Length: 123
Image 1 (tube, rainbow, N blue to C red):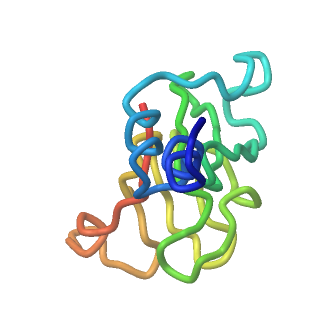
Image 2: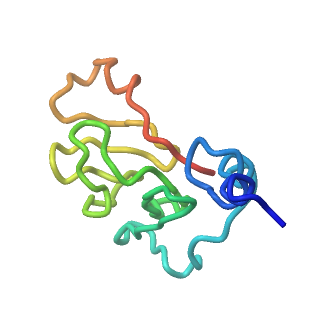
């Protein structure tokens, strides 16, 4: 018989928990591929206690990234999916399928700040 502590250890899968760390090392089915259309609407996904969005970019590459924009925390579920990226509807920051910030409208084209911005992403 498991103690309550052992049961908690084995059943909690949120980020930073022992079992959560184990599960994050393996593939977990989240959506059917037909649910993601190139440049289509992002889909909400909740896995292991994390709120994520999935989308398929212009080239057909699938992204699974943190739901919240790192700038102001706006949900990227409402983002615009076009031209190989998901654009936050609030200030227009754009992220690729790897979670890299590829464009900030208010930043000069030779600016480097966007290189320091990253969404958590899963392959």
